[in-house]
Image 1 (cartoon, rainbow, N blue to C red):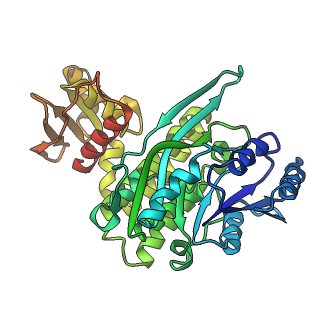
Image 2 (cartoon, rainbow, N blue to C red):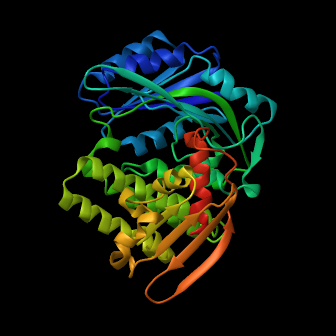
Image 3 (cartoon, helix red, strand yellow):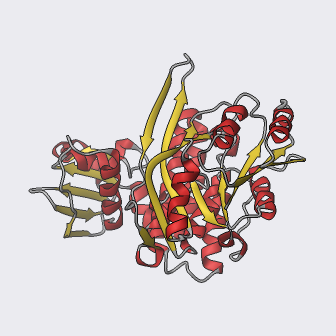
Length: 391
């Protein structure tokens, strides 16, 4: 029914938890393609022991090439119509396959996805577990042609989803051999899917901030640039870039913002400036209109959730300022794009775009039917998206 692809590299401390969560699934009809990518910490020995105790596990050892080539090999070896990916430091709820395959049996969507547990252990050994919900309609068939925003809201992670294998084979999707490879793959796979289905249960456990993870490696921050370029190339090469340009702009900007925010947390000031310069040039190369958002100052007056939503958009939180204090920044703002948001009543907003060359004022409709007390992260992201598309 489904092939489970698990690449392994130097995760000896975590791989037992991962594999135990798979072999203990309530759904029994599956194969595990376990690929050791040249581990040097004994992970391969653990994998071999697991393969000898469960006939559903096909174990492959190969030289170290990276996560992407391991996933590609898994796709080549997969025997079933559907495939799913699991990172070897993560794990599943024991009902993951059962719940994810229910819509497959009934309706046959191209992609099934689920909500996520973000699990973390800090340096003091204290653990935390928060649930992150996908911002898409649940328990129904969603047609991509009717909602192109799904390339964003289904998220870029390859894991936490079940795919029809033919999405990869028929569209010749090859996973690249650098970090943040998901970004180059998942949105394109979604764009080529007919329909998608969300199971509204958190079934995937993602281990955050693991030491040694590629996503946390400062030296690999530049790989996001390669992934974004590859993503754009795929859409252009398949003549669907213009069709998805609006959504790709949001996705592109979100990923650039993500990598800059990461750099701001772990890099020195000089390195942060270099990374910001690289990604700014990349962003405006494909979407020159984003220059004013990157360099803009957001002056906010009105409901508190607008400020919170704008902070989800801004590269630097210092870009978001209180309109009542604008006089203090008058000289500094004169040569910048300024955006003023004012909400006299729920559901209405005014945007003012100004610079030293011109001043444009217009009214737009921003649906905001909730108070800050009720606003969860998902709703704030929805509001941020609506504001972003007005910018």
